[in-house]
Image 1 (tube, chains in turn cyan, green):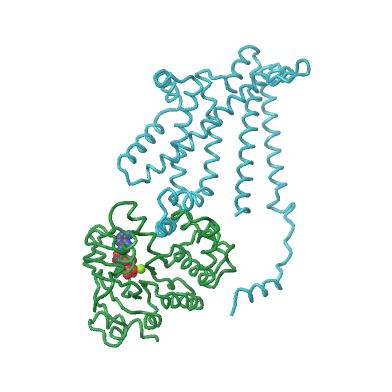
Image 2 (cartoon, rainbow over the protein chains, first blue to last red):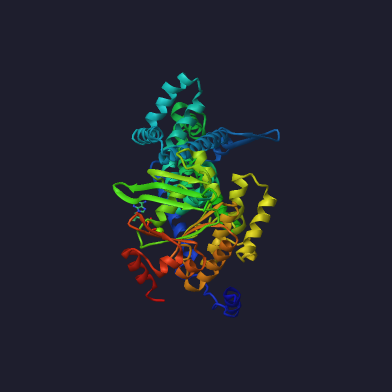
Length: 282
Length: 249
Ligand SMILES: Nc1ncnc2c1ncn2[C@@H]1O[C@H](COP(=O)(O)OP(=O)(O)O)[C@@H](O)[C@H]1O
Ligand SMILES: [Mg+2]
């Protein structure tokens, strides 16, 4: 007696009614797009009106040479794109460190070890209750000479420890939302703790961790601008330098913002594509 | 009558949750091949007792000796003992992100470094035995409760356990799913598996149990062969329990 096969056959005969078109109905994406377009036009109009009222001399034609130049058929990165490369390097290294620090801290927080939990808690409270700028100065002026690292790595480490304190809580919440029965089933088949984490808990926690973690990495990209105060030659530093030479504050800041936007938005799209892939590939 | 060493010995086992005593002075021997059914009112400590055997709960008094090895604090020792004991949970606890086949091969491949091909063969063999080999590539959520529980049994069997623990394996199932799971358990019993089952399926108990254990308030109140336990319970608590549980049959 196979109920499953029977009901499958019955299901096949019952086709659902055709779906109604959603175009131009209340939920239509067209309305969203229209709203967004109105908003963008309003922002541009405000900017132009503001610039006009202060007699701003727009010089957009001078911007492209700060992005790139072609000399004798050779493509040369301008200071802004060079800065972008440094920003991406900072982001990549501090992202890897952030994820590592987050996972280790989360595991320490959840571990049975008293000293482990204490270390994790002290770290979290210290980082979360002091300003990022002060932390950066501490890393650059105090720790960097002691550890013998340059400004780039001082910036990377500072960002990683800062974002790691938030990442730890994201990972902890993800690990804790995996039902207790899953931990027990892993134990019951005799897996050791590492295998249990790797094959059972993390695969179930990662889909929950991924969206907030993407938000964190986007913050990381944005926060990387702060290392301009210790003169690491990243995107914001390059922008500051160009403006001090050319006084094109509006053009350069808009360009810099657009570049940040381009990376953060592409990252978001990449991750949501990954998430969909994970659901289908399952 | 002389007997082989017991598969499982519990000597004066006690367990407290804070100040609340969930198990008190539990003494029990399980012989190799013995089928023991544990029953008792809700909250009497049945789950806690069998969860102590594979250290899902830590006992605080007494000794638990499995196949000659005492269960200690040591992580390696705990892992070794867990690999000899199969556990079937009330709510199946299959790994939802893995296919049925991966649910079954994970333990042997990680714990015993069994090659993938061999692990798959073993897994398919046990899926065959619980009569769901055709579901091997599905995910647990695509199966009915009864099928999931049979996968859970097969997952435990893939570790070639010396002792199988069942904690109310049919309590979460729709009525029409129960017999399929019980059939598998009866078959397992007939093949000589050492089993300890917490269940309220008294028909099953009468059919397969060598020994009935009745628990109440964290203690073992009665131990004996099923004829005696069902026909002539000694304690008032067992009489009351049986009258309640059998009144609808
Ligand atoms: N993790 C726990 N924390 C506190 N009390 C618990 C815990 N697990 C079980 N108990 C208590 O221990 C007693 C026995 O529980 P349990 O072994 O689950 O009973 P049974 O399986 O016989 O219904 C119950 O009173 C229950 O409330
Ligand atoms: Mg129970």
